[in-house]
Image: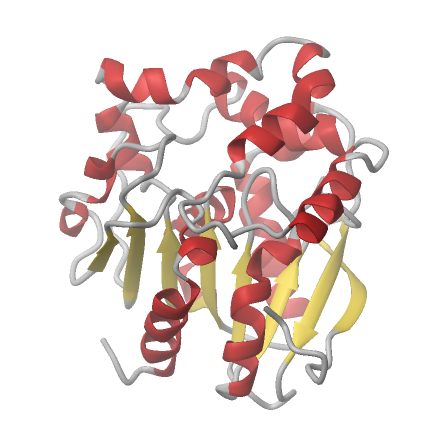
Length: 290
């Protein structure tokens, strides 16, 4: 958890034509670390990491992704293409005055981080992925019925209006960690407040609609370029949405990648095992662990 003495700065930054709500912590001169949340979360998904990273000397930058919580919610499915989402992050890094940053992403934040590393590696110093599939690995695993069974909600989200209606119920069901303290009652209330903001439910679900209708993760047959960046993958093996084998064989596309499996953690790995995750993050992002 963040501690009372931790100074959190909230502001809005306009980048790539969208206004993002951004939270910052840590020394202003520290190496920048961008934390990207996933679905159905918002910046508070990282509250177990912000304080430790800031106290380790990093300048921690935590946006609400476009469409989420206090960030702008552009209309239409096309506004949530992965190509635009990764541009948001690159633009945010530059708007804050940095040429490069260490980028950490979970779930959809990890999908965006993979895309950023593939399309604009010059803005990524180091890359950390938490339970988010590499696009080529996902394409391969989607051939298996077991993954489609886990990804049922992706197809459900293609329906009109109904997914928005049930989003609060789905969110409460989805946020089930293996650690009883993963999401405290007051935190869950703030999540529900974020989901209830005008336009948020449709914007959040439009990520999946854009992925299926406009191409993106798991689509296409072309080769995926290699990522030649220091890369760490943390994978909670009790993920009910993603098969553990999505973390297998990543060296094919990311030479030198380091994969750490957390057998007791669910999809919400940074919530289930915050101490282990924080130790791995600080060691890797500082360069003391390759």
